[in-house]
Length: 302
Ligand code: GLU
Image (cartoon, rainbow, N blue to C red; front, top):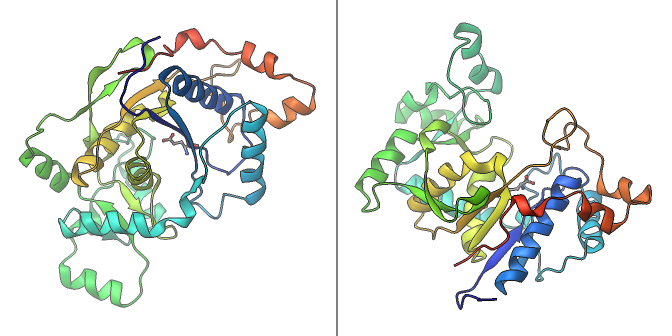
């Protein structure tokens, strides 16, 4: 086996907002196998910025489930809820470049565009693109609303961000994709599909998108292996990495496990948890036998 001399740092990054299911087990095992093949390191990151949905018992269950799967990871585990200052630093850096603005709109303000225009474009997650109401507020009005304590989210000014990107020598934005037999092909990033995406919510001072790019860089992650439902998000992550001057990992978006109806396994659709499968007597061998690792090239170099 040829091993690269470069460090290979992989991570599995679950959110403790429910129990892990077979889809998580597949993702965790594929990360562990790739780290092993590459002679690299596996990190575990707990993505728990959403305090309203995350619970300590789910976090404990993650450790138990992963140990049951035979995984080992480097300590200490990074818990995102302990690093809001790092995400605030990244947001301040974007602010200093004039690339974010406060948004006072409610969720229903943002969604109301669909009542008027059902064909209004949506982002890859299915949310309507923001129509820019607060982008056009005067500086005076913004300041007054903030001074009055009106809660505000923080949005990326996508046009300004793309203009900034145009100035950079990189010009063309993409990433090296290894999933689904892509073998490291340069894949075009399409961040504009996300419009003026929220980078900090009114109630949570960082979004998944900002936290993930900051943490992958801070933790020296070189290989991001995650489900292909995050493929389109990678375009946005690459844009944020360029704007924040962070290194680009390479990516492997793996196949998703689906139920009999073809829907991806998810906590929201109440996919059966690993712990209940275990309680029903399912063995680790039986879990692994469900997975077709061959569909996801395990050799992830260079
Ligand atoms: N925390 C995300 C999840 O549980 C994973 C994000 C990622 O791997 O980038 O789906």
